[in-house]
Length: 517
Ligand SMILES: *[C@@H]1O[C@H](CO)[C@@H](O)[C@H](O)[C@H]1NC(C)=O
Ligand SMILES: *[C@@H]1O[C@H](CO)[C@@H](O)[C@H](O)[C@H]1NC(C)=O
Ligand SMILES: *[C@@H]1O[C@H](CO)[C@@H](O)[C@H](O)[C@H]1NC(C)=O
Ligand SMILES: *[C@@H]1O[C@H](CO)[C@@H](O)[C@H](O)[C@H]1NC(C)=O
Ligand SMILES: *[C@@H]1O[C@H](CO)[C@@H](O)[C@H](O)[C@H]1NC(C)=O
Ligand SMILES: *[C@@H]1O[C@H](CO)[C@@H](O)[C@H](O)[C@H]1NC(C)=O
Image 1 (spheres, rainbow, N blue to C red):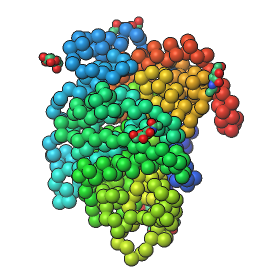
Image 2 (image 1 turned 180 degrees about the vertical axis):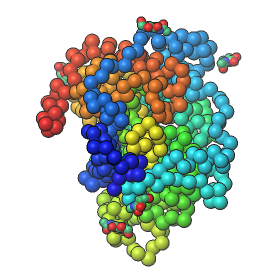
Image 3 (image 1 turned 30 degrees about the vertical axis):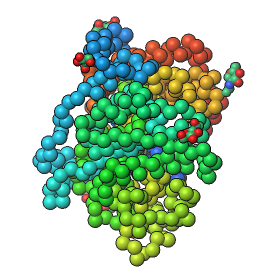
Image 4 (image 1 turned 90 degrees about the horizontal axis):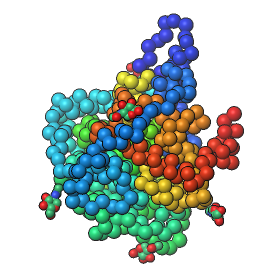
């Protein structure tokens, strides 16, 4: 049962040793919990990090930052003034400097394809197979060149801090990047289109080679004014259906790879390169699409680059070979509307690997194609991939990043919470901390307050001291601290206006607390 990384104990077990012993089982059970309980809205795994184990306590000093450090990130330099870029409104100086870097034409450092290096990269990535780690390899007889990757995402009021980091992470890698925007939110609330052709936002995203010199960027609009059977989630999946059309239009074929994500998520650059060259069974063209989905395990940043949570992982984006995607793979294997819960929705149980495709004709040589709802949810078979790292006890390193709750202004943030998937109707009347437990954690982290009351913890040092992979954008000297301090200013100003209640003081928060004890 136990992954082989844990040596058999030779001395009487200390508490830590027992914890270490039980942890892989706990992590495994927690990792399948969303699947067991059909909890498809919360794709996240709660895991424990080694620092928690070492210290046995969440009590710790908050990380120190000084306002004199904002100047480190060239925000006062004349390069901003000299550039001819017209920035969309509301972007602070840290964001403008980030975008200036992201828009600078540059060579693609890891462009050359070197089999020796590909080999070294591939053997670092693994998934669990019957509790055993199964490592990838590189096989030059199968693949002599990189697979083509296509990114697809919905887009709305995502912060440029998240979009800029996404673009820098993947610069020069994608064949095409496609976005779909709607003039209604997922709850159906009308919203003003942001990426209108000719606007600064549109120009920056689509026309300035933000994603690299050879990457096509396509943006389309989705609108639907009628009643939608199935509500918000179906609206979201209908909007995503347009992504598959854009992929097809951009030239995706059966041996290309689709990555379905939100605009604030990305695989790490190294994992993107792995997806292009390693021997993933899920990306083998000979497969039958029984369990084709690769799930990226992402580290979550709450609002600020300096607020990385260390007690959970986010199980997105999702990756599938073109052969198994609706619109790209053979029509012969496409499910009918009757074989799904409803139009545009996920498949019925008897057409998914979880229930062994019991209604799918045995005579067919391939299992059903995946629509965007299957792709994004946990219907059907999937495999989570981790990077083997030596700074964590179970070596389950992240393979992606989630830039959660990033925003330019607190007005934007409240609008998002008022109108998005799980709306908080009175968000306009609440302090940021009160709106949601994740925002409470963010505010405590950004304002340097104790974190004990929160369910999750953030890194106990500055990001620069973190042993693992960080986003390429956050390696720009001074950026992460400059943005953190900018945010500290924004949030402390906001708390002057809104009485500073916290989520824990709300009825919901107290309820959650009493359930725990
Ligand atoms: C910023 O201020 C702190 C505390 O006052 C000080 O220790 C540090 O040296 C200063 N850093 C710079 C770059 O001036
Ligand atoms: C800005 O525009 C001017 C005039 O069009 C041009 O001469 C200059 O080179 C541009 N500067 C940059 C940094 O692109
Ligand atoms: C897991 O790996 C061990 C050691 O390599 C092997 O003996 C065992 O059969 C494997 N278990 C499964 C379920 O594959
Ligand atoms: C959304 O756009 C469509 C197509 O342009 C239009 O018919 C519809 O009225 C718009 N809806 C809203 C809420 O603006
Ligand atoms: C589904 O099939 C697999 C492999 O054929 C088998 O190991 C598994 O037990 C089956 N699961 C169910 C729920 O029938
Ligand atoms: C917000 O507060 C104002 C003033 O107290 C009140 O009029 C309004 O109804 C409140 N809105 C919501 C959504 O709670």
